[in-house]
Length: 505
Image 1 (cartoon, rainbow, N blue to C red):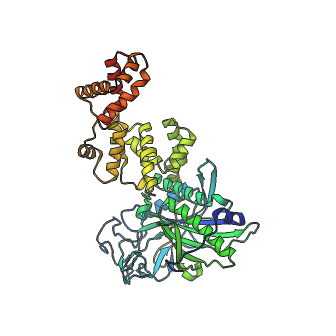
Image 2 (image 1 turned 135 degrees about the horizontal axis):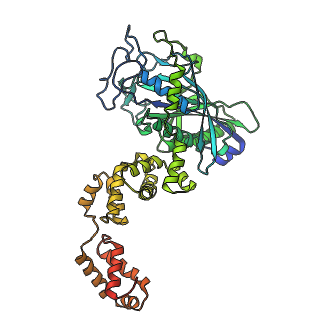
Image 3 (image 1 turned 60 degrees about the horizontal axis):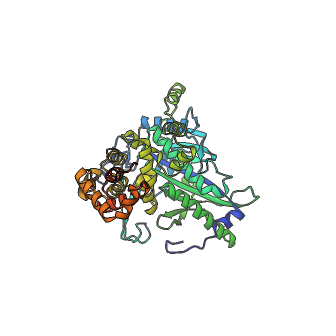
């Protein structure tokens, strides 16, 4: 299949009426170590291409690897947090395949002896239901380099005239977390996939082993999916959608593949076991390459690395030092913030919990932090099909907007304009306020003049207020707000109107 081909999809409900989806999720987490997994090269982002390499990560003859101790520690922490068993003895293996971004022509990984195995992660769905995802394994490995395909329209290898290779990323520590087959989710399979990756991301960030920023490739998910007719036990042939890098896209990729598989099967076709590319612009997938089986990689033990044998005392010490895990932390925050389970679930679904927490830590009241992230900013994220965390605004900037509102320098209408300016790249909140002239009109003389003009222009409404119908003051407040371009303090305007007309509020 080429990227130009179009596939007829079976309606989602029809697909689920005939087939049961089975998923397997493989999540790669780029660890936040200062150096690579098997050498001392820096892992800092943004360096010039191929400037952070050495004979070891380039696979030069005679160069010997050494295991990164922090990488091993991070792997154990992740395994413990996922309720896994930690191996008493494990070793690395060579996964052999040729691809230009793999300088050694093999990847140093783990095969039949992972460092962590047989765990689970409970995830909460949008309606509060808890779904348990069982973990097959979490193993250590290294990342590949990065290929840049030049000369084509899509940025992919198809149609490119040539490719450039940057090996700075080659050798960066990865933990690959592989689920057992996820069965029984039915129509909620895409939702389960999204919820699992979201919960896993929060867990990784809580452990402080990675920033897990999906938009930067620090965490990416391969979505394996197959369908089987209702009542059948044998799994169908799977496809693997590679390197999906947002929560929304994980859900869309699973949903699309369910519909595509059903269309192929309903038409009497055969599913090809292959890798596929996900396309953000329309949520579709296209064929990549035929998927290898494990034996095709010719795994064998890495002869240049000694086995890893984590001491039991050290493992238990790490277990005792694990931070508060996300689900327990959300429960505590819910109580501190005084919100309902439904509200907390809405914040979780929106990817807003950590953003709100960071905004509170930056000085904003919890209700203000929730208000802006779940209101104006969530609306902006939805309109641009962007994850909330990917918006070009920081918790500290939102906290500053909340501070300006609390201080009476902005009202809600003006605050929304400030957020709009920050999102548009006009600068920080104070810069936007100054450039756009958005501060609340607080000069009593100017407000008094605007109030007097509104009263004079609306004598009938003024008479109603004098007669005791103070609800009519809203019309005059509106007139003043219009005259001041929304920059007056509405509460103070109302007070001045009632004072001028001798009415009691």
